[in-house]
Image 1 (cartoon, rainbow, N blue to C red):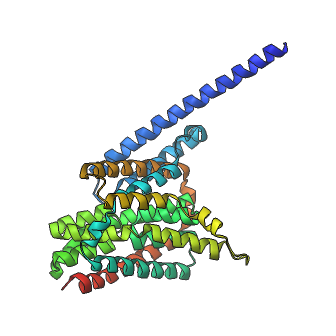
Image 2 (image 1 turned 45 degrees about the vertical axis):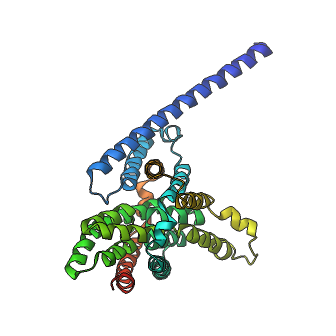
Image 3 (image 1 turned 135 degrees about the vertical axis):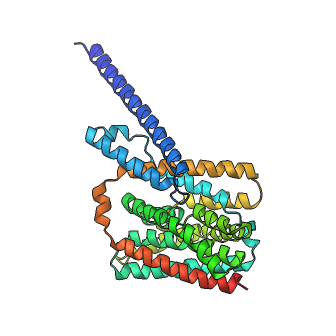
Length: 354
């Protein structure tokens, strides 16, 4: 075979490989969209607090297991870009944080948000240390319990480079505990004769998912929904602050133990840049540059981005990795949730109960 013929054969082979890779990518995209559609249907017919991230992770986990058994997981997973979708979703989340609405309840909502986030974060970190949890997992749990569940855990994961199975574990804890809280807290508030403002502040400061917060407030009345939503929004606004402080702590304390002082560039490189996008979108929303319909559309896109992200996380996990985490994180999460519940009850009474 002459040189020209060899070169033609090589080019033909490369062309065939590219076509095969393109077909696998198309198949991966089709599978991802199908799983996202199934997630949406399951979330629509399940209890409100069992949100789409849990169904997405479970479906992704099941699909990944089947693909692995068939020996095609690596080829079929080309479109499962969990990190990209997570960052996109968190940026879009900024449209749901309107600083003007937060300020509409005055300093009370801001004071409650800052005090609760600080106290619950510190308590969860301390308790996790007492039970010897791995520090990255502790950081995710602290952010999830103290701020706003899944979204805060995503930001924390970017700041400390947490493993995928840790984020999936915390996500499951957040969503599963939200359902009983959404149902029980309005009943307790009614039995205690709480005012709508007091009850709403309690719901918003304690329940970890926004959907469950709104659901609990709706059970108690329109005034409770408004206060609950704004208090939760005030906590959401602290995502960027907590992500920055976690990145700073991780670089200076956890990764700077050799005695060398980390540079500002190193801290900047670790800081999750998508949080800046979240803050920018939040500022634009607060300036009124988005209409209500546009905000609704952005929120829908956010939900789809998170759905695709958690399908990807589930796809990349294995049951063995989840089992390795053990039950101690569950004990820490439940204890921190109880602490958050009682502290939020007291603070909401002081700030909104009179």
